[in-house]
Image (cartoon, rainbow, N blue to C red; front, side):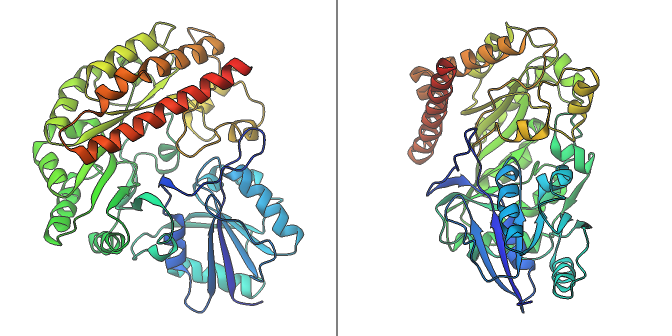
Length: 442
């Protein structure tokens, strides 16, 4: 066996099987920089991000390693099947592979669970070389090493990904992260985060923390922010965080001083019973004041909202519209609730005979795009029909996609930030028009 590994991150398939390809993305996963850095130095490696480039099925690499972070697994399975047909050793890993390992048994030689570091990658490749590859590897979390950003350096990615933790201290029923980490998180050593930020600053001016919640540990976050400032790192960046940071003026001050300009916050709903029903422990009545404090600190808010919770009705879209348009949410991110297999909400809906798809693949092939909205209702809501949920969602999206709302959300004193927000909100409008067109064709 030659010591050459071919890393592949699949792209997404549209519902008709077309591959999503392009020359730019706002953000990408950190899987490839981490895997490349963890690969033993005596192994030659090739890294392919299929969104940007084509796969060489004639590669002479002896090991094919496919990583899937989400619905790209549908395309990943087809890639694996083709390489197996060519008698290659195929390894599958990544976030979605953990949940969907039962779909992979016939298309790959082994499935890797967890986050392998240099020690674990050496073990896997040594086993492959000696024909001792196991069907499954269950590793923990190793993120304490510097990642290899050279694999992204020639890609047009607006926000270069960076990581300071894995997991989340929250344990929401609908969340894939909660299904894996169950309310726990693992913090990365700050020296490696700083090293990565320095690497990013040599190839980009913007970064995006891909953590599920950078506010998992307040004291750690403050140390990290002060380290960014002390190291004179000039990147502008965004991150996911919980809304309670709006009460923490000290953290908000250091977030802004360290270069944070956009926070992605999952508020999900404006109905307190909905939050309680999915084990999300925040108060809706606190949202407005907390968002006000975040905006006053000089940081804009992108807000996640979902429609289809058990207390939602056909009147809920109007309530969501009133809330989003009355507070300073600069970028709304909307989805119909997705009952992802492996989550507690999926299990509950399945037990209640409310799931509308028979096979997991039917769900995986419907959310076609990177960061695109899910506008299909895959379950039976309690207080409306699935069709009513889809129509209500489309109506909400359309009202928020109006030109007045777009301009209102994008206005700010910083012309660079205003241009960015306007661009993001125009994409929001284009997505609505695409959903509307497809709906009219049905």
